[in-house]
Image (cartoon, rainbow, N blue to C red):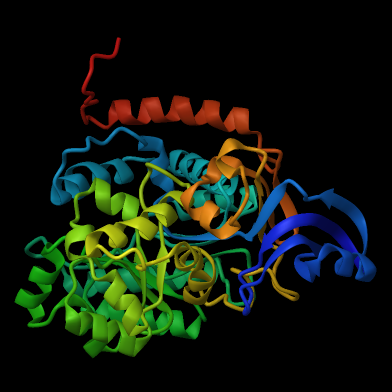
Length: 457
């Protein structure tokens, strides 16, 4: 068998159907696919490769899949104060900062986010639905070599008296139709559009129904924010008589191509509705803790998992693109909250970042595991680092000890996009300089104050 690349000698966490962990393993790539995985001596008998990579110092994993990330928020990383309530954080800071960006700034932010994810082992992401300059973001993301599903900022509810609700909904649906036509993904495109909704109470029932029909017909998915704080449930109960997940289930817009993000403040009926409809839930534990959502006090994620709800992970805002930080938090938060060390062990949180996420993305046969026939999206974690030595349990140490700082190399579709800790697809120094200059100009004209605990001169 001829292959383009053979990586040999690594410890391979396959995430395959048997969840094999291979010491002294090897993996071969031909084109964009994995053509062999097994013990090094077995693969060596099968494969003749153009390039051989010595993998003996590495732990290999599938590329991680980030379920929720606002890629344009990287331009205001660190700028928003920590002590904001949920409504102020969203409406007085985050929304104006998003809306104040021009197309060039959105593209720069998205490119930085993609590079940050690749450099920490994420090979695929689902954008959070707050892109304004779709073409600029699409081109920036595509250039980096990452796999992605992105969507334009879409909301339609008339909050201002006198607005034409029907016209707002019609315009929103036309936006969704246009982006799906311009950036299709049904044929396996690496970067494509999904009809993403802001969620909360910003989208009407008519838009939900139309977006779900579009997603179904285009073999796409939907995601939306919901219930990080009690306000969403209170609004839905007042407006519809039901809590959010129950109302959406009764509309018929939940299902196996739908993911709801946050879902901290939910009740038993909502957990049942999610499980019965096959709807996925994305948890962003870093954002939840920083935002004081109460996830460790009221979050029902263990109950969701027990009911069969598929849970995957996101990084959310600008603070981190390293999905290994949410993995560690997810493995610990609910152990402590329930005083039960058996809740969400390391191997289950790794599943949330790989196979669970691939299932939610509708790509279970393509990504999320290292098996013959799957796309060659993979990561080499450098074990010649203090956090990895001694190497005794690769899965446990990946989640509890390591971080994205140890990612040495990354392949997406068989292309090496990170090599020796550097992105191969773009000029990192140029990008970092452009981002610094653009961000300083951008936050300067935002009109929002720069708030620091200590004086900066």
